Length: 475
Image 1 (tube, helix red, strand yellow):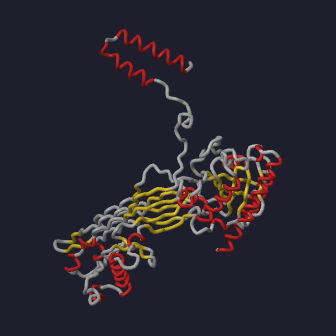
Image 2 (cartoon, one colour):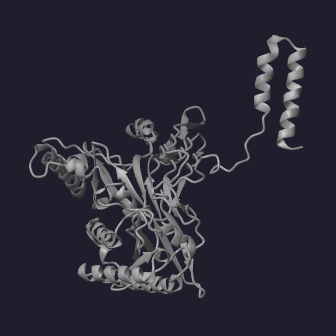
Image 3 (cartoon, one colour):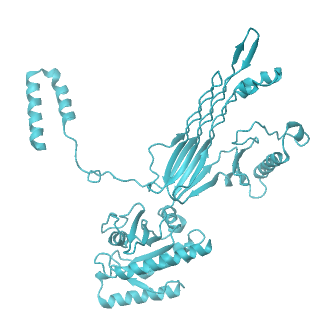
């Protein structure tokens, strides 16, 4: 039966039910009819919903599992003798971030992650099980940053967080005392000279930051620190360590009874909570070649023509709303990963039109491909567009991207006559010489008809290999 026939049949059945029953069942029957209607079989994209959501920045909360409590128990031997037999508590699980080359987005269903708590120890020297680690998979190219609280500082030498009161994120039993008499009581309190020096430096830095001398932005400068750059598959980092489990009193079973030591068994049996951290994950696409151009210049059409990627293509600007990576394959097995970012506008280097969000995806590329609309279908001048693109790339960041090997491509030549093609290519060549650009030739193509793509693919391979050699030499 077709959907229309089924719908008519169900509707006639509901009408008969309504006629036999009273007015009391009318609304119940209508609700049953609505719930029994067949669901739409259209694709999410056809229903106006995005089938894929690209997320390149996310903030998450991670916390290590708490340690299990140690047990304080005794085994009675005879009437008067007791032997301690309490087991240790298990350590809490940690949160580990691992780079996975099978992922391409930071789209997550939740943003709170925590390790498993350790199990408590019990009598008869039964030790608690350690908590399981939580492994969070992220795409390759993610930069992990930790957001520090107002009372936290980052120690670059030891790579750990130090709080204002002197304590840190390690499971140590020492408590730093930054009082006025702390210099005289260093050895008495059991501090080492190195630990006390770290605490003193923290106190001095805080005083400088709060006194208004110098830059006066000590805490603000350290509110965001980079923990790792996961640019390879399998790279990982522990971002939240699990708490230490409590110590059971079975450790003193073979010792001579000491009343003071026995009194502290309850304190040693306490467990430590897991480390709590707030992180910012930023994804920077890993690609060999990056496409740079104004909206509606034909970047998506070129990527679809030279790779198996299927970007959305339409005759209007800003069709591409999220970065997309395609693979250009050669017959000998050589591959080039090309990144198509949304079109740029003038002022993108200073953040206009989400320029920062798009340009940072080109920071890892080995080479760039500048593309302009030679036909000027949107009423733009291709020569002026090329100059604006050069200026935006040169002013972004430290200007390192402008020095990379690059290609200049003039697209949509099929819309021009032969004389107009030569004039446009000549004017663009003059613009390259005036800008002292390292690339001296302009490649004319038509992504729609395929004209010039064979020559362009050879040039793409050559420029990517040049960028790879330069990267190896610089390292």
